[in-house]
Length: 542
Image (cartoon, rainbow, N blue to C red; front, side):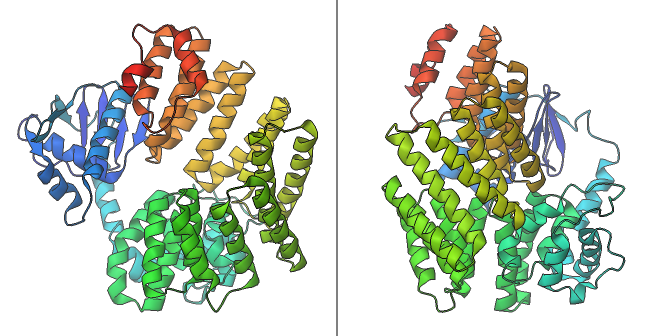
């Protein structure tokens, strides 16, 4: 497409694939993948220079501007693009030119046939809505928050003024009400999702007004996080340090279960202003535990435990995180968590007690697994304990904790060969998780369902849940985790008698397989059963 100068906010077609730079989506008639904004920006620069070599320096300058990033950022972007192209059925469109850069070669058409009419005007409206100052700091925030308060309250007869909306009022309104009026158009964001995401702030009586307003306005967590992040720099100069910290906490709460890197960056910035902020220290330590970066986690835990204003609940919660971060012996960790559980119950900190009991069960389970000493009686006992955890979580409406507890129960039921009950429990977890909009957890539950259906020979349902798990990852920019689901798709195709398709997907899985991750024996065996034309695992490893 000669003369193409600027693809910002445009849709471009290459062969049968549509690249929507406005929504950061790569789409075919059969699939849709949401791609990270900066990675799509790399593609946009390459397409704008279609047929010409673009140097690495130019790509860094155009995409990352004055933000300092390492060489790996561009390497990763090119790798993700090639993987997305392969999944969409496009090959060899991005060429590496040694010591010079990259070149895109493809026949491009401006605008996709499927683009809905009136798109341009919609974009103009959206762009005006996306100005950070307008929503976050200006008069519109007041108007939006009034609307959001009315929506959150459900069938409330009177709208509370946004000026006088206290954290306690917001907390009360976010809890779902029985027999509340159902709006004519059901919102995408459920009250439970908002309550769950903001629970660390609501439990402390901290402000949540901006996060609630942005979520209700955009009806999408990813978009809400993006908008608030865009507003972050402008907010620093117009807010007091205290208000700016409160604003950052709201971003961190929304990003915690969805964009861990964003959440970590936000909490670290809070600690620059307030080194003894217990919530920031606690949250960032939990995120580092999830990333298996134990040294960093322990450093922040010790800093939080040394803080002056430390509640009993915070101290017990930090102690739990410290046990998880320092656990070398599963049996010892389980015993330590049992002590935390007992102390929490004696202090009537029932939410902390429930979490401690769940982690205790988890470490007992891990210890029995590594020592190959699991018995049916153990599993039955653990399921019973998780049942009491679940009862406590449901009583306190700790919605964000329930899916993980149910998932653990489902996995234990599978070990007892009670797969029908496991499917029922996984399905209950999935129903709630879909409301909470947490892609990582949703993907895990979908994958458990897909695997369980495959085990009982229901290939159709196994494939359906696996396809949905893949879609969740792609839409959430988590393509780095796709290797397992593609391998599962290969197994399903193999069981269905589709040998050629099984080999094609197996190769795709190995192309995405992390180099540091060992290929399980079952997958090595699968390759030998497939009888593909050429060896795959050894070729990819070499």
